[in-house]
Length: 260
Image (cartoon, rainbow, N blue to C red; front, side, top):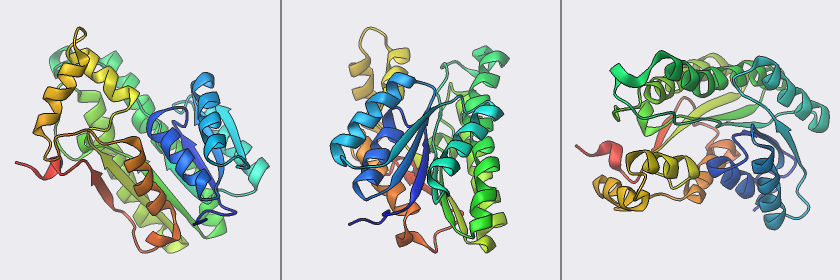
């Protein structure tokens, strides 16, 4: 099913994890892609994964730091120059940051995490939404987190940033709905990605797998989610199958955020 035939999608954080899995899924459904990441090596590996799924996919890459306005302007400009439009935007780039209680978190770390996870998301919206408003169509999916709808502990910067992404999502959805543009967010839980693996190493450097197994016991499914399970939901939200879904923040967490 080529739901994205002729459609151009921009994916930030496209060099690994959820971004890469979503790129593969969208390419397999006919999308033209701009993949954005700070890691050139990660982008190269993602292009290989995309080509394996869709050998004739049209894909460009842009190395960018999403917290820098000039870099965001550059990936938007590159997309418009190559494809002429932006039909979908997976505003996904982010970092976890260090794990410490608030009193030990440090302002430097707080600002670092917010600059990427929140300012980066805002800059993406600021630069992409005018193009969607002008063409009177478009779909945005922001990556929030379960940590953006509930407290998780030891992650002041991450929690504050992801709560901010939820606010940005709802605010922009209200502003742009009348222009044919939908803005939604996903709130992933424990998905096994390089970022989550690094989180487990912070919990137990000697036995991250053991820490992971202990951590996941609180989840009703007793397992981690897979990036492909996120990609399928993102694809739905970016597609015309969800044309009346706007301002939604959708947990994808095996039910954990609903558990007392």
